[in-house]
Length: 580
Image: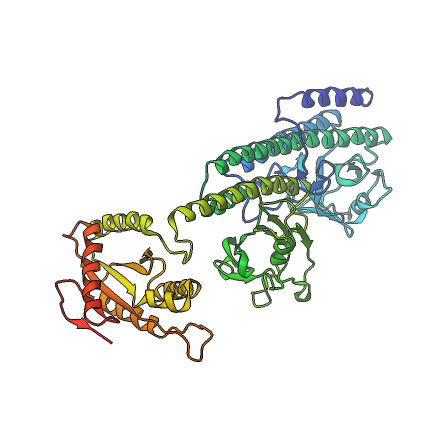
């Protein structure tokens, strides 16, 4: 009678499980979960046909779980499947009272291996929770073979040992069926054994087939829902970052937001972001890199002539997707041949980010790498492509904002600060100097006899002289610390941050000598040479008026000119002239 009731029990159980509250629907794989004796808290790995397969679960260096709490979502899905498997096995125990142990095996990451996933047994303490079914596991290995729909043994020899028992049991009967997906691929198996001979018939095997289908459908629904929920949240996060992009005006903030979004939403073992920030020189640098061997890439520069696959994707403005087998010869350089070869990284996905979709060369590239060859699939590609489009637009906008700002604050000829932005920079540096109690050295310099240069050689030559001197000055100061500006026609101002009287004069002398070494081609026998006169004033903490500080340096400059030019003079405190 109970065999007659099995199909009805299966249907009732299926309806009950399928109507349980769960996450919204979507797509994913079915991962290995905990058995009654062990816990596996792992995150599923998305595969090409995630709705169709169980898979062994691995966790990358970075799993996107910060705001989406992805691991918690998968944990909830795992718990749902755990409960469903337990219910299935308990149901079978009631319907098949003569059975001894009920087990569920699932794909262990290989088509030729199943791993024990859950069990219900009269001898719980004698079950090996790490048991596997492989091609060398005797009668059970038949369940791995295509075309085998069930195994049914009614009188096993005592010497036959089943792999999930710690010690030999006097198992006399065994029935098992594979768990199949909709394409008839083998995802696992259900096994039931008994201590009695001939305990199972065809009816029990048929009932297990029903249960195998229930397990697949329940697991499919649970993980489908979890995956769909995650994907919805990821696209919702993309919308939130779109808004953040439109609030961003600085290019460096675009880099940072790109990094934060990818870190939050994409799994990886190494994440690298490239920027072609010197397009005229066809050169760029790595603006972010975290993960395996990241120290070799941080702040590293590259040119478009380098033969790395990251550079190639950026140069051609085309996504690159590659998987690698093991082996030293299979390695493809990421930037160039000089880098350390990491053979653990088996898959890479490079998404270029261009300000214009049809550009021949992209300005940025997002480079993801993973240890697993099936890590990046259609979902990640679509998501990152959508993000790249938004990021490219935001990057173009930020570049334009910075160009417009430069036009307002930079001298068009030299690229140095102009008079207006200098005053703002001096006020800012003075506030910082007052807080930290250090000096600021102000240098005012003027090109000697510059009017004669313009009158004799013409204004184009005069412009070349101004640009050459601006470059020479910039080469003698600390680029990220000191301030340099074109103050007017042939005048320049330098603010030396945190300096001493001696350091100020030493720097001024270096600038004067560097300018004196310049040679300008004026298409005559001898090149044109010029000199500068420099006035210096030391702003100590008790001195507060930076406008007056510039005026004092200007007064010292006029004294240098009156004294014969091509020399450095410090205002008041040191009247000694340091000359040519």
